[in-house]
Image (cartoon, rainbow, N blue to C red):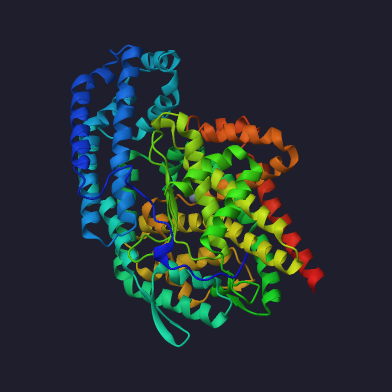
Length: 603
Ligand SMILES: [Zn+2]
């Protein structure tokens, strides 16, 4: 790592979406949307009523699925373009309008084809079993099985149609309002005597600032701005909680998180077991922050000390250097992965700089098997940005490996979706760690890694518990005041630190900008699931070397073609076994031990 000049945002690479469309007014967009509508109308005319009646031969049903899949590919292409283009300038009305138009047109298409999945649920059991056993339908067996399971929670076709047609003015609209509200927020912070106006990404980077006073000021600024916006943000959250309560009741989901488990194709027992094991291991976090308190020489740690760096100087890693670190790490693991990674950098598949109106954070959008993925970053030159690049690239590689599956089986379900990303971070971490030549640097990097692991495992489990509690509270107490959200947030996030760290008052507002809670309820446990899984996989890689690599790549290439339990069974993993999860936690404890030993050596 070297001290480098700050690269002006304009010089960092932007992604090139022109292989999708040329801009908001590209006439191809309307052509494709119209073509999609026509295909959907034809599909409806050909199959409506016939699927449920079970009159299709397996070959006919296969043809229907092929056509359905091809519409999905087309819809994903135009939908991805609209949302990717929007994400780099959410404040541009033309991009917002395009996104809304595409969503409305896609809803129109969805309402025309939604009979298909619903009717699959109504096929007589005997006939359905015949379909599952037929050779023609073998490529769609997983999709058919999943649809059959979900169909238990479907409403009538008329009801589903109304829900889809109104979706953009219900939950989806509130989620968009959240994105726009949070993207517009500006945070003022005094830096070197000058008051600056910062975006959220820029402000959050101060969590890692070596000067405690700066971290404190940034945390106060965050709290203040969020507090001013809580009337809107609280209203959005309450509305979404209420909508979910209604939908769960109508569809017959027992617990607020049940629908997520269904989407994740995971048994409830696996998630409950993982969460319980993590809560039992909160003491790892507590013991770590006791060590950190000593290392920093601060008696009472608070929330803005969580990510305080151990070294005084702030290191910058230029984007180019980050790219070569990450690429080398992947190359050392497998040249095949390296080959798959190169085009991301050479062909403009990554949007790198922080920019006004650009969505915060980072993501990888997989689009479809016949198109490559795109990555969005907000690169601020911090070492953790290197990890984020490795993370998102992992997603991209997973997508590329899985591209031989049809679109209905392309994306792995969420809990496995974080496997390749987290594994990529692990490879990058070990590369950085091995390159260092003194214990002080090693300790600092190890602590960073532990903090990242906590953020991925224990923090997500805490957020999951927060979500459980707010859904429960909304169901039992009605519309909740901001203070109630604040209290539950402090309670859930505080529990994992035990006696080692006291969350300050400004922290209580920080539930309000977490997108997952709003956008995808109960998404967060997938991060913990993925990280603990990867810790075990990584241990196997160290143990088995070459033999593991092929197995692992094969596992990724399977995409979402099987349920997680089935895919993992091939690797001899049982996700309902608490020992398996404890094994992952033990590896985190080992890293903590490594850090404690290094600290003693340096003392
Ligand atoms: Zn991820």
